Image (cartoon, rainbow, N blue to C red; front, side):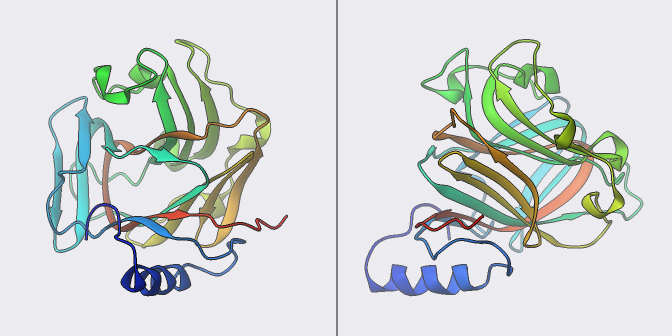
Length: 241
């Protein structure tokens, strides 16, 4: 299923079922499902930016990104307000040329300072430095050959990408495991910005000037990742400490 969910009773039932399936520990009240994507009907709602040719395809409800260099796959609909983005991801290690288990990354609430009203009006090559001028939240889990997990608030500067010491993590418990599905949840709820893995918060950032609209993008480089069960929820209220 792809795109915005229609209103009515069916929507309410679906929203309940999907939200109830989320891992325990996420401190939100139930919200409306804004978008649901099962990767069975191609990639019409996605835009890919590849540094070098690679494989970006859907099959059997799974999105595969198998690339030798940088790749960002943007969700075309713009997101606004309080949202949680949720999906399952697996880093593949099966002897392939890109199976290095690194860089399960994401942008959310992203705009581009070069074309702030239209993310897609600026052409980007897929090379990581092309994204410096985003205004966005970014999490890079298992970056640098699975040695770091980092969070950044991109500020739209061509050079500066601030990284706070508490957002540069290196413990094994926040790195990637090969061939294991994990649930990722990205939160933008007013001034509360969060990243969860399997219901556990890894980053919890209070933003005094939050980004309240923008796009979501999967990001990886020289990796082989599978993704499924993509959802965007409206956060209703009551984010607990």
